[in-house]
Image (cartoon, rainbow, N blue to C red; front, side, top):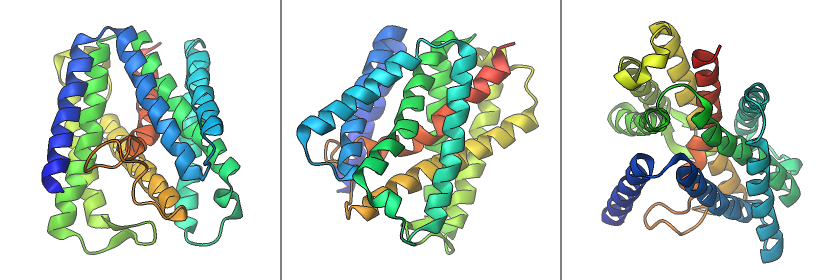
Length: 274
């Protein structure tokens, strides 16, 4: 299982890097929409919807909303991204309340509705990166490095020092010590990134502000991970799908991103735009 997981991860990383470096902005956006369409399909499984036509209609709606909102002006895009951040704070409350019964979250329609603020703003965030000053590819790579460092830092810190469970009812393997390690690793990557040449548009941003923002981004990525774990527990599912050998489904890889990316792009909007 570990060998399969490592091979899949390497293939995904190489494919992603190739797409970022060589695909034009429109091609990369199309690839992102395809990935999120698969994620939306898996979300319908997490909601408990079995009808294939209903699931396909939901996927079409998510993609359509992403395309429609991408036509908004930059100020309205900020509003949508800010609303997404508020939603993820509400998701944190649902995580903290688990396993207390929540009839709303047990209903398929409710989970489908929750998928709107979870998936659509993330699509919008990706498409809006092209409107920001600076190198779009750097912004994408920096974000991936930030989220990956949060995950890797949490894994190794949890392995070495983890004792106190973070959310035992939702994800028993996560610990507060691992959470702290993930925050620290993300802050280091953020500080390194802000001093790289492609980040010149961010040269005037205070380092302390960058560290605080990185810590919040890492925390949001954990919220996204935990919320998907909550949905899987409610449906008694181990993974969101089986498309990625050793990793599960696409949503199992997107969970952290859906929560962190709108916040990241919102911060970039305020940092580099007048």
